[in-house]
Image 1 (cartoon, one colour):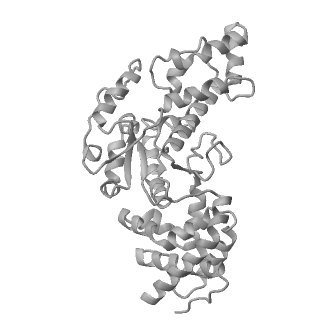
Image 2 (cartoon, rainbow, N blue to C red):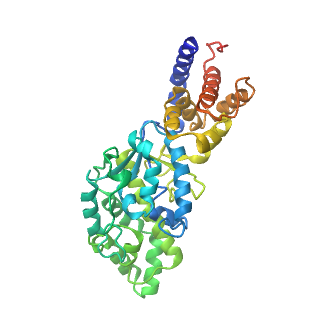
Length: 376
């Protein structure tokens, strides 16, 4: 076994050295990036017709736990949860309670501009001061979010509101995402479009320190928005919000989820987004090929998922899965794995590890032509 492990390590290292320049050029995926958790964000979910706080709370929680299993496998670091979710989502203490082993391991952290959640709450009370139901006014900090194991990840950028404001004026111009909103507002307000645009350009200042979210922004408009305009506005704000966090934290995002893509219009071609938008469907395909999908999504404990993602073999396979130039070779390796005597649909960590290792050796061997295949 020791000799085999030495062989596998050498083979993977050689294959990685050969594939790394091509992988970086084609995908930009980096496992050392943390993953930003957007799939519990009320504003993002609302873009896809989901009411995270009330009507769809149970459904969103169920999907959030499933998504976390996938997200955990796509980073060597940790998942970043905005501190706002703790206060704005009524079931968040339940969610964090389910993730307690990950919290204790430092694999889930909260991100905010200040480390003390009580201080953060005081900041946000002001931002939501005109909200009919201020979610920060009566929230208790108990459970996992109040424990010493829940680690803080600082955010030191200019802040979301500043970043959204910097994009806002440009998107109001002809050709911008919000120019149709300017036209519609001017027509219903019965004012020249130039005047409507000048008024909307002052929205960041007219918010007077309130959170830059759709329901507060809509109140600054002189007339009600139509349903398509509200959708366009909501998507722009959530897209700008996600972009701000991803760039500030040098993080990635799990997208292409069962409840929607959850990227709010961000694409790999968007400025700065190359390698940051990771398809959950693509990961699921890899897990299926490896015969470990059921294990990952249904059977594995959190600590087993942490062990699985730490395997060099698994990291190698995920790297190749997100490199378009290597997917075909990975598919062939998976087919070879299915024919191996030791292959079985994994029900235990040991079986999952065996499948992963066998597939990694097959794939590494196919990219290292000067190395003969290892034989047990």
